Length: 476
Ligand code: UD1
Ligand code: CA
Image (tube, rainbow, N blue to C red):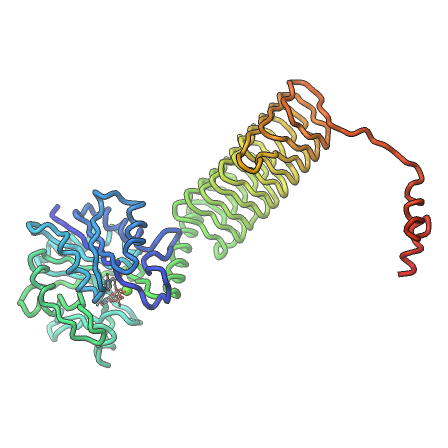
């Protein structure tokens, strides 16, 4: 293969105005640098050297969490004196006997595709040039480096926006920041860089003029898909790119048969899988590795992260769920909170203001209103009444509640865990369950009801009111 890669990620990203390294800002749910590096590792280059500097440890940690030591090598650039200086820092990590091509890329350009880089590589090999780079033509060249060509159309140099003359700035061909360089030439050329520019930095882009001075072949490969080469330098550009990614995710889903009532308010991660014939309402965030089977309807206003949803399930307005599995033909919400470890077997009804956590709930079981079911295993076809609460926390530890099949758990029941309730149990409303209940039992912990007829009128009179309760109100 004989291809190595260098990814530059040491810069501060001043234009972001952030304490965080620019490349650690999130795009489509992951750090910018993670995306950029993913494309490059997929090319099969080795070694892949990532240059870190500003907030080096954090950038390294974010990448190490995703890539093994065998996939990435880190090089430190301290202080950061420009992109050419960064490439120089990477050379130390390139084996001295390496004599192939080096792909150099910037860590703030996360949209470029593997296919495009493959084609660039093929073009470079075919051209026989010692240095190739990707350029694009832009109607608005913004602050990008301009590609200056001679009368014959040959590339002579790249000039940075800040250093460009009025006439240079009129050039519509810009440098994208992807280079393929012969390793031997790279070692020589990086040594020749001088910081003679507006920023007093070592510019990687000066490699072009150096190659020209050496009389070497330079190839500028003009790419057609401009959108792939957008860089992120400001929060505006970050938001624009987020929107681009989001739009393309929504478009792919709609093309594949998913109805999005309002794509503009659907935030769906690229990793999410949504089957055809699902209908997704407005204002939803479907994040992480969420998997939704066909025929699911999400009314709207939902926040779902790493959730699996079975066929035909209905999520009514306002469901929040994370690390949860929801079976087929369930009805969830409105306003339900399914926390981590929730597992609904199917045909479940989890209604308004019900919170579940580490709860395995059997097929057909319902909890329709106002409940907390945490650290619980509940069987099939059980009805959990309004206001039932698993009392799982003693101030130090969490305890488990078990309820069997076909139970009627009356309203306002508290289950003091650890506790076990068998199958076919009838729990009268208002019961506090403190010890095991056997199968088929009726359980209650009622205080007998006492009555004092006529007590209300006496009470009112004691407070200076009339017996019907109207006197005091009139006075006020
Ligand atoms: C760079 C190019 C410009 C090109 C544009 C494309 C140079 C001098 N200019 O400009 O021609 O049009 O990209 O997007 O290369 N970095 C370091 N160490 C440093 C400085 C930067 O590692 O000392 C890294 C940054 O983290 C970033 C990348 O290099 O990922 C590019 O740096 P940036 O400052 O964004 O360059 P641009 O001004 O965008
Ligand atoms: Ca940039």
